[in-house]
Length: 419
Image 1 (cartoon, rainbow, N blue to C red):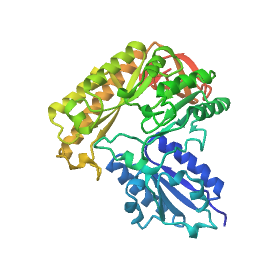
Image 2 (cartoon, one colour):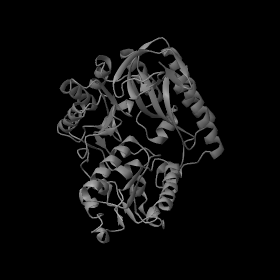
Image 3 (cartoon, rainbow, N blue to C red):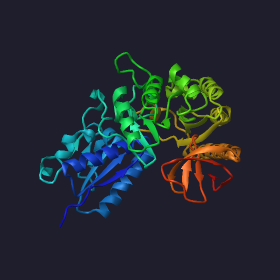
């Protein structure tokens, strides 16, 4: 009976997805077989619950395979997974990027593998961004440029899963992107845990804007560059200049805003005020009028009153946010917010629903405004692509996949633009 190729299941963010692809290559190179690998997320209690649910399902589907759990939840609470009967091995976030970890998981060495391999993530000083050039569809690649976070927001467990901030050197990033463009990618997305902290640990402490300008200068054949979630209060002058002057930097920024009330922002230990967020959005859009914003917003943070929540709703329109990621607050054990007075669960759900409805209304307004406008659309499949602002577009006839097509938008159907 032949060896089965490992099965990988990814949970959570783009960085996790990037690392899942890196692990797939590491496992293949090491000859790992008959294994199931779950790359977990720890951002909410619901994310951990879904990971446990997926583990049980994958064990039922693969009764003979070695079941390996890794990722942020494995890093922050390894005992939770080590105590599950379905789990054979728990691997930390640093260990999963180490080729020697996978070598020990090869069939002839599997007996030498420790069941729990999770070391102190705070001692890690390097990224593993060099392991693969990127991943994605044939049209869009994601490139890790940063990992970890030096901030300690009171609701967030992620620094304890990812460690402190560390950056991939600019030269390594540029070389990766050159190779991706040479293989036909038309869009690259820079990813990280706290992207705007990129460079602080590198010689001369460059900023994210320096990296963006360097990529656009040294990779002139790259048609489209995107940056993933950023902290608006940490945006530097060069990044603002790139927003204003570089059409190849896509006019879509996802902002880590989290709330619209100043007292809640203080209790979250955020570094910006509501006015800071509004000012940034107004300033950035003045530089680039076609800019759209996404944002992370938490509903029902501890001590949130109805008036405080109303400020978050107001923020959606005052910043003219289009793409919302709404998180119903859930306490993460070990975080300061988990010890604060909690909001009733029913209220949290109601407030999250209200925020999502506000987001849906913003999307509707944005899509309607695009009707009759010609857009450059990157095709992700023969009949689906995305505008520079990341709106989804459906075509009635086949288009060249992974290419950029310029077309007028004729309508909206089922929450998507039509061309």
